[in-house]
Length: 492
Length: 142
Picture 1: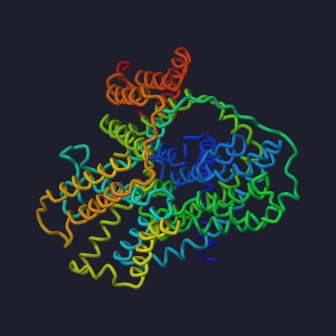
Picture 2: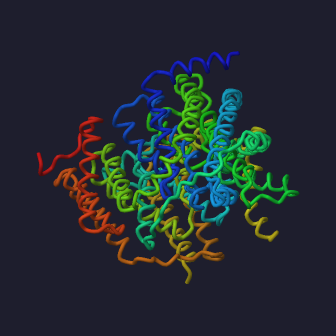
């Protein structure tokens, strides 16, 4: 009952006309960038963030806009996957397996419809779960001591190597790099300058938007410009519409995929890609008898898309209630909140209920907007693919620079962003994941602050770090996550 | 030497530099038992350790060859010029130049690139300066 009253308060915030308009804008942008290959939700949020700050949007409005872009992208990624056999987002890879065969059979429209419905079901059930789980989880976290937080953050960072799929040392190194980048500037405890190289511009630390726009937007364009130019054409197919029977047959699949997606999403480190892969595999096993998976089974489209959107929402739960982001994009959202001097975590729900509940309420509305946008207007979004690269990327780059400049008005930050762009480009070519850098960056200061607070509380006694059962359990899981990659190698 | 090993070596050097830089900090007074040195030193050590793992075992790391060798340096030059010229030349001129150059790099014909550059620049200026009321440098057009 209490939760419902708080949610009602949230709707009062989310239903204000300007917040409704921002949710709509965010949903449209999110779907559009989901369609466009090469621009993900992370880039889009990094690009929009400086404008939220420059326009002095209140934090709840900014968060409503940015989060709408985030979950909106989950609706867009499937369009290219189905029509072109080319995932618009990494998490839509599995959607190509059954989605593209359906499009070839002339049932692209039906595949798009079922994936839109699946996205809506997965996201909406997850928002309901989030509504009721966030506060209990936050209450558990209120009791966390600084030492427990140290263990929790260490666990979140160690998981990067275990679930990333790539090379574990590279993921950890990227995380360390992010942590070190976060320490640049004046140390709040002692006033000592760290890693500034004596420059005045770095005294206040690195601007989060400079890092994110450099690594993701500029780095991506450097990667795109070096590869051979390819001509791409989009087809919008007609064919037989989706029947009610097909939707009903997909309902159990959607519920199972929502459960898988949400649980995977709540766990730190694992993201939407893992969730969509797991749910597709699970559905394929369950329906092995007919052997229609991979040849254009509606359930093969519904499963990954439902799980993808459920995981995206699940990812927001630890970000809001613990202050620990589970993925790169939620790390950027956390960075956005920190730029507003709002610390997500247990106290957010008590101190800024307008922000926390306004956001959750807006997600109910946003998902309805997305369903309405995506069923009839899917053709309009698909036509975005006919925009040539030489129109799209100059615009993205100009927008990136305008965004960096809008925050700081300094040429130094523009050059810094270009430097991070080169770093992002080289790291992509060397298979070094970039998400741990962002996670390390937003968690770095928090980790050090809590570590120093814990040490101050115990007068420098290291045993304080493992004094509570919570921290012992978390450190044990951290150890497992660190050993996991080498165990996985040995088994092969 | 493979790309993965080179990367590992780079990370070791970076870790060493960070650790050295942290050790060189002069702490005026001890505000807390840990101080500002310990944490960056530990993180730098982990970074270097990950680098060593990559040097010893550079599994599957390979630097994808660049298909169009001239493009990344050209793009970097255009971006650097933009960063330095934005304030003196003004947003409209600098952005038109940036967008035209990038459009050419992405394979646009000269006329199409010029149109893209002009339209991008004016659209963004209208969006920011007029609609959103965010001031942009006027430069030469002031």
